[in-house]
Length: 625
Ligand code: ADP
Ligand code: ZN
Image 1: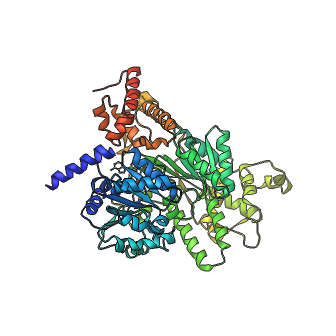
Image 2: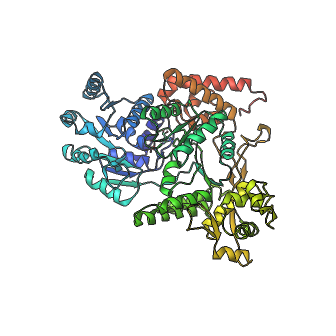
Image 3: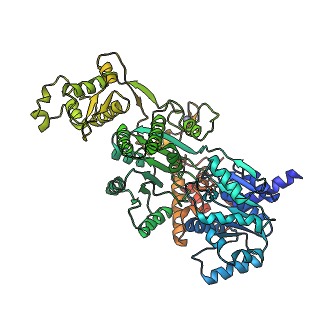
């Protein structure tokens, strides 16, 4: 009996949603709702929360009422649900009287699976009475942490949702959040009045994300090199300030990359335009401050780069978490420089409140520890959330690829410290670097620094390297910024003096070098080749990237004609699977994850045509066995 029910579940999953497997916990949650139990589920972004309520909304009698905090998210959810063939409507402050009437009518005739509403709407006079006249299957509360003052997005309107359990005692409540702290969890359960809820706390691991840290030594070049490997696919570059955001966006544009800036200094309509262009794949890159975040529901963000050091791990996790929500591989790159640490430290010192100073200082330390980490990045991140990553090698971070090496930089440190000391600890890093690389500047001549024994001893390395090293010396205590002047002037410390005397050592991390190649030449690639047991490909570049490109182009055309975001037609992971399996018939196409019957009808033939054409024109004859 149970087996039959499971088979039925998989059939609905496939035919309606197009997926062949549940993600972790989805099935348990769906079953609990169908049993009539309340649910409290903590799942990371991209974990697939929507399916947990959309599925029972389809199978249960009556309408599922979804409460969601943001208009933009709600609109996107409703459009996506409709594009999957679900009967969904929304009622919010922007709904016209006629749409309102239509939604209510559909609900009364039992022709609606999902009704999305804002909390304000739920609280508006007379609305719950309207709901009471209908058959409500259950309530789904999205972003449930908005009910807690301890959450980072408290919404007073959410407090009233506590009335649901009293007004609708027979309708289960399913609450979803990606916020994990115990305090917020306790608030959600008690304020919503959940009745012995079925609880799920999914892992915060995002297995499809690849984490890498690189030495930030030449930001612009590094960004451009990375973008060469991105194959035109969309991504976000975070920068620390509005000014830096503008600069980087400008720089990218100059190099022919479709990029736009996004920060809180722009007007709301300007920001909306940027977000929309990004959603519709009309631009490739958004360069943003952390103001860009709330409400980005774009599932096909293929990379997130941090050009400056994030303030804490939690923020880093949230921001990188915007990559790869569709489950296809995505890359997270942190460009780490000690100059950022020096800068952030100087900000921290300006906080008046000692407690704030202490907390932010500790958070910064954790961030540095992460960057300099001597272990798997994933392990480090998950430990921060109280989770122990079970495997030795995650296969998708620079550490596990064996790319991180500690190198002995003692001799270089001695050169740098010596330049500092021989000039009386009176010059800034820029000038000290000039001395080491043997620059011929006005100041060097003026102070006769070209006669120092250290002049030119660092010629063999680029200026950027020495900048990095000087800042590393400061951050690791071999030098410190002079407290008696407002200028950033380093002086050797006791530990530095020891290094100079040959009694101490200085280590640096040699990070993975920036990738510069778009992809390996086609001929030399071996299908599914592995290197040291680690999957070879790192981005979303499938074996058949040409076909993938063609499929993406087709998707963009179809989406443009319908004025909707491309990802809503098929996700990147669905296109990837198509490129790999090359289905030739409708039945074969239906086997691809993400292709349900509704989408098959609307778009199936378009994509089959692309594949057929590709195979026909393929010069070396595809192996179709
Ligand atoms: P969340 O709200 O938890 O951030 P979503 O509900 O938006 O996540 O789902 C993230 C992505 O995962 C969506 O593109 C969705 O279509 C996809 N997805 C959800 N469940 C499955 C599944 N069982 N198999 C494959 N893809 C899935
Ligand atoms: Zn790892």
